[in-house]
Each structure stands twice: as C-alpha cells, then as structure tokens.
Length: 346
Image (cartoon, rainbow, N blue to C red):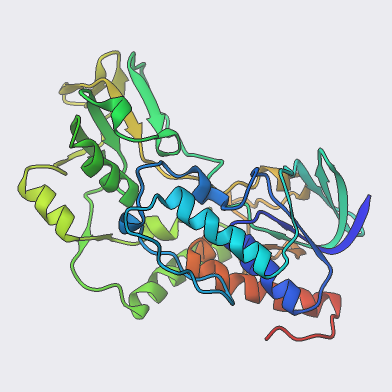
C-alpha cells in the first residue's frame, strides 16, 4: 500500500495538465498511465494522420507546442511534445500501469497490478480511446469490419468498396483519404451539418454549455467533437464537387454482402468502417457506484457529486484539449480546498 494525496489516472492532455497544477500547488501526487510511453491517445492515431489535418493542439499549461512540419505524423509529433513536457516539469509518470479498480473507504484505494495506492483524492483522466463504440445492427456481414481505432491507413483497403459509418470529423477525413485508393460510400444517422461561419469563442461556449447541461443532469455526456458542426474546408468543397461525400441515410440491417434498408434497397461492400466515436473509459470506477438512473454520472464542474474526492477531467465538457487544461486547473483548486492545502494554484 502506497500513500499519496492525489492519484492522477492517465497521462494525456487532461492528466498532464492536472499534474502541472498539482506540482505548482506543492501537493504530493502520483500519475499512473497505462501506455508504454508518453502521448496518451495520440500515440495510437493512424499513421497517415498528419499535423496539417489535425484540428489543432492546444498548448499544455506552461509550455508552448512548437508547430511541427505539416506532413509530420500526429502519432509522433504530439507524443514527442508530451514527453518533453513531462521532463520539463519533472512529472514522474509511472507506466505502463493499468488501474483495475478505484474502491471507496476512508481513503480512495486505487488498485493496479503494480500494487495499490491509497489517496485522499483522485483525478481520473482516462479519456475515451480504449473504449471505441460499435453500434449494434441486426444481421450478419461476411466482409471485414473495423473501427476508427483500428484504422492504419488506406493502403490495406486499396481497391475495396468501403462503407464509412458516422457523421463526425474522423468519418470525413478518412473518406477523403480512402477515396484516393478505394470506392467509398457514406451513411449517417442525421444529415451532416457543414459550418461556413468561423468557430468563435461564443460558439465554443455554446457547445460546452450544452454538454455540461447533460452531465449535470446525470446523462451520458455528448462528445464535444460530436456536438460541433463540421467545418466546410476547401478540401471538403473540392471533394463535394467531385461527387464525394454523398451521404445516405442510416441502413436498417447488415446482410452478408453489405447493408440493407427497410425499403429493400441494398448496398454491396467489402469493408464497413465504423467512425462511430468512443465512450468514456470509466469501468475501473464501477466499485464506487457512481452511475445514476440516467445512465451517466452527475457532475458539478469536474467534481463527481456522489464522491467529492473524485474529479473527472477530460470528461463531458472538458473532453477537448483546451477544455482539459482548464478542467485540470479547476480540479486541483477544488482538491486543495477539500484537503485543506495551504498553497495557491497560480
């Protein structure tokens, strides 16, 4: 049993920003990360995702992210930045350490194969990458199915007929990439909305408020990325002019050769690529019994209402790079108040 004031679970954007503010507050803390090296979910992005097509990386607190070359893979550029950040602020991240459970008691007990940590508070920053969401549709498909999390680039799907499922940014990006080597088709539950106006601070606040309202009501959080409209970039306009990104409504069932709709229409494909997002990776928190009747966890900011010693950073409204930074600072400020720490978070 190892004692510490705070355990931070996860060393992605949310976990590192939280650790930064814990360090500045002079608190005793431990960071546990399941990955073999720095980078969080970024180290698992598909190799063909380049920095030129990434939405944008918000600087971690206290250290600027120097823009890498546009053609550098995000899976190497961002982990390199995270690694330098850990060294700069002496954040001793213990890895690979997977948290199997967080248990209640006079102190929160964080169980791992490497031992148990006893903490006065826990900041959970486990993100979503390890929990890809696969929606269920009746029927059986004889071809290949993969999720965005499994995608490794267009080469392995060259010459195939690929059905892309999902209305988010990843679905659009992967279609444009696959269209150079494969025949693509696109289905979404709702017609995609492409935004022509700039992404202003006011628009961002509206999105965050909408997601925050859900988690305060104890409902499963809507993804901030999902709630944001698709940006109508020059690349997308050019693709539309070529007849790409022609969206079809969601199918009703799978058939051995592809998919089928209620009116009897079918589409034969070789591959179904599910760009259907992720869910929060919170299974290890099950012993705390946090989920309410609505299926979510009732939150007040980053604090879990049913367990004030636990903060979820990178969850719900803070599930974005800029949101995770702000949430890390807020969580540390509240934990200081809870534990009676004397130092202030600058």
